[in-house]
Length: 593
Image (tube, rainbow, N blue to C red):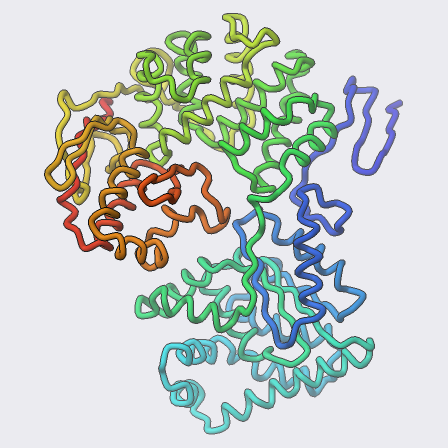
């Protein structure tokens, strides 16, 4: 008989031979602060306190990528404020799955009315006018873009009493709010609207229009899971190209009083990794190495972390004969999964070439990110950079350094036997690959699948940054090229590093017009240079900063060659300089099938 011993969400199985506590990381959002393992409690408590004391009406946007933890964050806020307010939760994604189409906005209003215990008369009034939400919403967007609202409304409904009807609807809803607050002896209603950014962008905009038009009531706070980019895409798709990004931002700002970005960069990832490893029965005394691999591959998105740990646990359970009882084997498996989930093409490439040039000596050499003197290392990167054309070479080198470090044995070395173990683990890790393919990428040597070789231009030549770079059988652009120098304003310079190139060129631009350059830094977003000087808006920090001595500022270098050249183009245009003034001396990489 199976012995089942339950401890919270861990289950200990003895009959089937599992000698560890095991659990699966579901995608279920957490409900309470006690479940927080990412260290975001201070953000929850701070925003909750703001909700309790803020003036109303107030709309707060919780922004972040899919899987970044927005629902969990809102759950914790709801738990924190529920004793002080009347709270209502509406999940737009769940309703949209029933193909409600244009009725989603109506459903939102009616659902809110029902949860507020509105009387029948108020409900009927809300239902009657909610069906106009989509069309009225169109008109209200134009209110922020200098179009006559009243005329549009009259054209839409052929009625002189539209504004009066809308006013009556708002009064009815306000009456419902007041009655509910009185009933529960509270002073504020907080409405949580989740998963707006999982809707089609134009549908998300429609819901936002309803929230602003009809629910702009006193004593109400709306907490919305939405992202600025989704709003801009929705505005563009629903109302056409005439509504540019500036007007999309105006629409967003009119609706959202408090934008809040999920603090992904400040998640306590080591704490999360340690807890996850311990729960699954893995060694957790190598957390720093795991953190390094994660930060350089899948990133800190909680949903991505859950996926990799689920795959980690599943493979351990399937391949019990592999005996994952050593720290090195577990590190190899985790490193293989990070490689698979972030660099699928390189993952396949390494498997195909396992019996050729991927040796223990090469792997040891790859640990040194700046080991450019080894011809084998250079050849390896020449091959793999073409497989991931949108990846910055330096970023890839940093990951491969972490990957190879995870393979080392107790003697801090990599042997032929270690490589045999790695090859076996790479093969079994394919079980959890999200992408099925019966063709494995090769480089023209051995193995199955599409084979090709890399061939560079026979000689270096100058290419202006204004050129559209075309390559044979490879994506257009600067990624993968070899740089040896550049020509700037007629003078020639030697340089093999793209990041240093950007630093040197920006330094020269600064010398030509310091006042103009300072203005560009201050207004970098207007010149499409925000990411260069301030990094990602989501992370709000520079990931790989590099200093420009003459200006004493740092720039972001964790970006692709294409992105670096794009920043240089934008900088030249902002300074009023000709793009032809900068030419790069390079050899282009072509793919020969």
